[in-house]
Image (tube, rainbow, N blue to C red; front, side):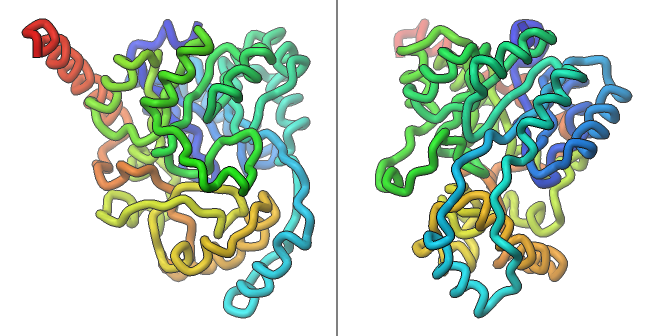
Length: 348
């Protein structure tokens, strides 16, 4: 079991679009944690090259995260929204694709890694069996007890519990705007809901930025804590300069579909404030349509027109090297756990 063999119970979240790099995976694994490459938005050849670079740097196990494909959006759903944006910004063509799901699965069956994790959905039982047959564990990101049950039925080995605090895209199997008025469960609530329905190991994700946060999810029943936003400013991360500069500021986060058509948590900026209310559910169509405006904003150093994905605790980011961060988090977590145990013994 990968989790049982970790020296440090901390997992690096896979962050698509550049932040997750082989160098980041190496730094996390060398510190005793578990690193993951992000296959989202990469072509199969590019993913294969990242796997090769990572293997050349470390013999430690690592994972690869895949985006599960979703349903095609009706163009009528997003036509008005894109017309409004197009009057102000350069836009691309709204497209739907599977992010190379089948080809990437084939690659990972032919060239196995220790863990294949998924976001936005669950592999079928047949797909899970293919990965198990080549020695890979399957970790599925879930946001509810209902999704956990589906993942367990499909044969998932580990569940990544994504709380509402998490930065980046919500991992819901189905992104239904009718659910928007419903508060997504926070991480501690979600861990309790999941442990009530399954004994599968949990990796806890969402708003973890300190050793006390790591200690909290371990005490609640998780086998490991997953950190993402806390790694974005690390020198090993491939975070673009505009995004890197926004992490660690006091600016709060909010949930939005404005940039991609799927709910995601990012640092509040002008674009989110002005366009979240009108943004439709249409992923990845909106993602491709807004790609040129986001690229232009990054090139211009303009943080008001780019997606600044971040969790609710991003202001606590330190920017220290990843290995040092993992070591400090684990050391602080042990202190926090000892303190909590001491208080309980004293009857507080």
